[in-house]
Length: 257
Image (cartoon, rainbow, N blue to C red; front, side, top):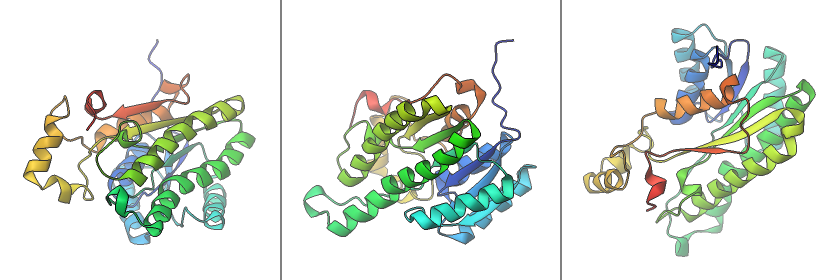
């Protein structure tokens, strides 16, 4: 009687950076919850792999749409393609991101520009363009994949941390501006999640032990532990939430690093 629905049947979601890691897992999870999913990134081969997994394990539609989410024209083209194929766009997950772990004294202008464009500009551009569609539709959900590094200072990755902190604040401002249109904007902030991209760092036994030692749950997160919060924020179960960041960090942010 009181349990709200987590079912996304009849919804269309767009996931950026959907060709690998967290983005791929989120796309598959949304499809498992019933949503048709538009898969966006620059690398078509990764998107094809994600689409194949969606078609193998679910009955959802998977739309492969290669695009550069740092370029307005490319994003606009991708959104137009989604609307043409699906007729609607109900959920946006801004997952595209990167990190370069250069010490602050050595960060180059090129590194700064690359990280800011990939992590922050892309999320704003896509949110702005999709926001116009959602306003016309009468509502929608936007979920930004930020990071615990935007909430708590980490020892390296100053530019990455700055972009993720900005993303958390952007989430609040967009939620404030767009709530009147029925658009809910939230974010999810993971700590270390075991993916192909983090495997090299986590293969360092001493580093892994330090990370686990500073995480109250004593372990690295798994992909499905990010997927669950995203599905929650995409569904009716979160119908009275906006402007919030859910930290999926095993309790790490209690301590800092």
